Amino acid sequence: MLVLLTSACTASHHSATNNGAGPRYGGTLRIVGDSDVDHLDTASAYASTTYTLERAFARQLVTYPATGVRSMPTSLVPDLALNVPTQDNGGVTDRGTTYTFHLRTGPLWDTSPLRPVTALDVVRGIKRLCNPAQPAGATGYYESTIAGMAAYCNAFQKVSPTVATIDRFMANHDIAGVRAIGQSTVVFHLVRPATDFNNIMALPFSSPAPVEYQTYVPGSHALAENIVSDGPYRITAYEPGKRIVLDRNPTWKQSTDPVRHAYVDRIEVAEGVNADSAQLQLQAGSADLPWDTQTPVGDLSVLMRAHDPRLMTYAVGALNPYGVINLQSPNSNRATSKLGVRRALEYAVDRAALVQLSGGPALSAPLDQVITAGNLGYRRFDLYPGTAHRGDPARARALLAAAGYPHGVTLKLEYPNDERTRQVAEVLQADYARAGITITPEPAPVGDFYGADVVTPSLARAGKWDIALGSWGPDWFGNNGRTTIEPLLDGSTYGLGSEDFGDYDSSAENRLITRALAAPTTAAAAALWHRADLTAMKDAAIIPLVATQRTVFHSARVQHWRIDPVSWQGDVTALWLSQ
Picture 1 (tube, helix red, strand yellow):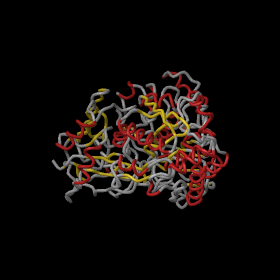
Picture 2 (cartoon, rainbow, N blue to C red):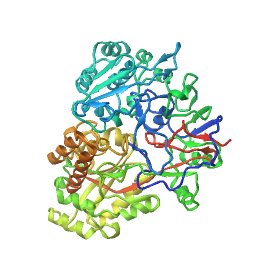
Picture 3 (cartoon, rainbow, N blue to C red):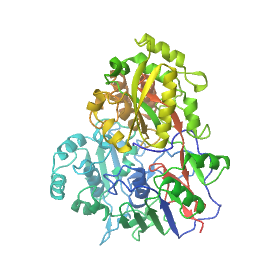
Picture 4 (cartoon, rainbow, N blue to C red):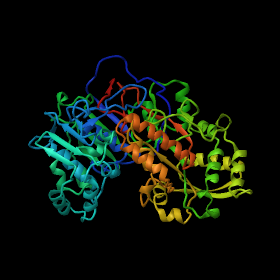
């Protein structure tokens, strides 16, 4: 998940706000922020803003519980399914290549007449993911695991993106590895064992889809105005760029949902509010939760010193930002393709200075590897040590000289032109100057940076950038090498839109990733992910910089705070209001 956030590190700094009283029903939860959702269609949405609302109106076979612990949840619980499939309960068979889900009775779609959520709805949800109009942003998770999904998606992408042709294709084509048995059983056959398949099924992408969605183009505004809910809330108003309103879903029953609640009567999202204004409203109590904005850095330090219980901090395992190295760049006699130059780039960084820039040690820590604490395969190591993480410019200069650059080298640094990333770029420019590396700053609009520049191989080959400052956050926590190591470092996937922006392509790394993805146990996968992390850092494939915690500030009215590990926001179905 590409993210613009303040994320990752150790643990929550504060306990959840709760006055110890029991649940309080009623009231309106007020959320404020700047931008609109990307989509409301579960097949297309891939933004934390949408995920915040999908928790309220879309259910999955399995999901994560609302928890008040001081780290992101990693264990799954049943949602629409009766159980989380395992080998012990018979849900995982055929040596890890068959997953069987049995649906619980009771969940209903908010339709007229009311209709139960069935196995066919689950299959329809998966089939819609690679539609030609607005496909899911992570179809690779499904294509690489479910038998026949890649072939199905390849054929689907060739279809005209109209309602009629999409509906006709889905009616006449099946995915070989997805089968509904009756109304309440879904069976998935995998290409190979995947110990993280349940995590993939917990993504909002995997939500069942009602048959009504076949009358709209996926991801369209028309569909967004006709969202069907099987959760505790339903969308009752949507004005793009202005507001979204959710009210209680009268068809939802607590007895059919072991995960969600519905304490507040209404959820209102007000858009067009910048970060400073949002923070003022949250502190004054005229708003309750932020939408897509972060607490301004100046406010963070004040809140931290005051130990304000309204400020929540969480480890989210994000690389935010990290340095991408363009191994294809022709600049300076292909400098970045040389291992010595890349290792010099690692040694030169003053990560301690970046920690101070990111809120200080209370909110951030230097990062020396790809896998962060709390994720499968994490073992701390530092291949490029400097005294107190201040870097080692002398060692960097020596490596440059040995690589054929005794007088230094000039490189282009491209970055999204937001305030924090711009500050990080300025620190790096000074760090690299001390090591004999001249940095030419290349700021870019955020949309251009991620939408065109770093994802386009021809621009990389032309030398538009040598180093880029990207941000990357995992789609789930715990067993998540598929959403961290694989997208960033698997060179076999390189091409237009690939997240391996710099075209790092190591046969040894690719083999480790393939073996880790097919590992029969999480223990075996952990060992392989660690080796993949170590291999990438020996090759200086990317430049980890700093791990910063995710911070969320809420109003004093918010009680029973629980984190949703998918949206990285408060779980809107779990909290209640004090007044």
